[in-house]
Amino acid sequence: VRMVESGGGSVQAGGSLRLSCAASGSIFRVNAMGWYRQAPGKQRDLVATITRSSSTNYADSVKDRFTISRDNAKNTVYLQMNSLKSDDTAVYYCNAQIVDPLGYEYSRWGQGTQVTVSS
Image (cartoon, rainbow, N blue to C red; front, side, top):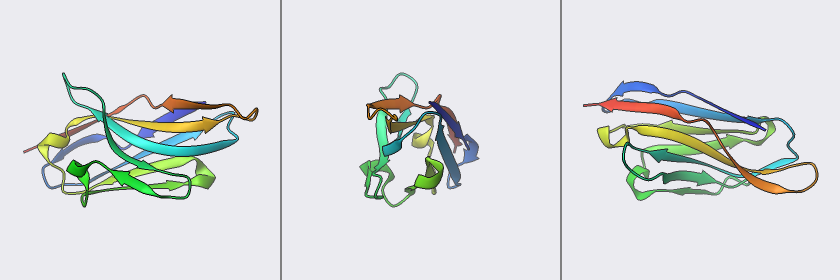
C-alpha cells in the first residue's frame, strides 16, 4: 500500500495550505485516518484524526484553524490549514488504518511533507 502526500510548501503567517494524502494498493477498507506533525528536535504529535464516518478530533493548538476531511471513495484524507502560524512549521505525516483483503488491519504512514510558515 502506498501513501502519497501532497500540498506542503512555504507560506507567510496568516496564510493557508491544503494537504492531501491518498492511499492506494491492496486495500479492502480504510478505517481511521489522521495527520501528525514533527518539528525539528521534537516528537511527532497528533494534529487531527477522522473516522470512516467522519467523526473528527483535533489538537487544541489547531482547533478552529485546521479542518480534516476525507473522501472514502478515493481513500484520501485532506487537511485544510488556515491562519497559519510560525509554530505550525513542521513535517506533516498522514496515517491510515488499512484493512487488507484478508481482513488484517495495520497502520501505514505517508512519507511526510514539509510545511514552513514565515513570520
